[in-house]
Image 1 (tube, rainbow, N blue to C red):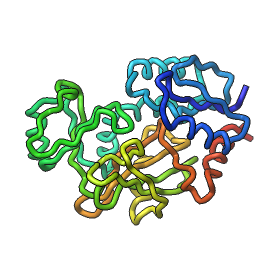
Image 2: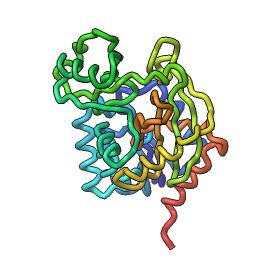
Image 3: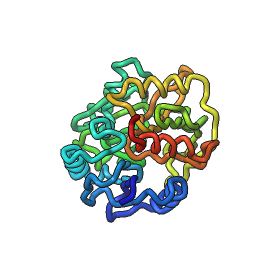
Length: 281
């Protein structure tokens, strides 16, 4: 059996999964296989990565059950299951904030209501972003202009509330990538005109970039505050009104790694995996 197993979307599929599979296959060679994250996993693989397990947020209960099953069976998951479980719910931002990491100001509403929006606008300003705590790819994420009511799909549901960060439109969102604890590369993601979402499916695009001043300090503070060591990580951040960078998300489950933007073509990522596979001496 192949040494490395990479988990992919369930039967619902994803328009970009095939492209990413091809990129990883070209980088890692024949010792890699792919299977849906919903399929049973054994312990025959030396390492399992949920790198393309996109869409798990739509099946949160199944995802939680899968994590429990993998942990109980001793499946060698990277990143470790306890770290993935913590990272699944974006309320981890409050943990990082408590440890001094500069994060985007965030409130949590257990059952989103008009009162929650009133309180958030008093705290954050008139234009808000609301999103589920378990989400991905901007699914279920809304931009609420001044006076906009609670979206029907979000009313009464647990939601995170944040201010709209103006720099998303004027500068973009930075992503920094770390493999085996070492910095690899950075990109700048920009939305299409008039949008706030930087994902490709919404017209966003990415540009190879140098990490701006202070970005690596924010990224490394976030990684250091996480409850476990990450073999791979993407750290998303945006500039605040004060000019400082603030963490948007710490992506430790299934981040697009944008390896085509890495100067080494992904060699550091491949070496981090090989180092994990080599027996200790």
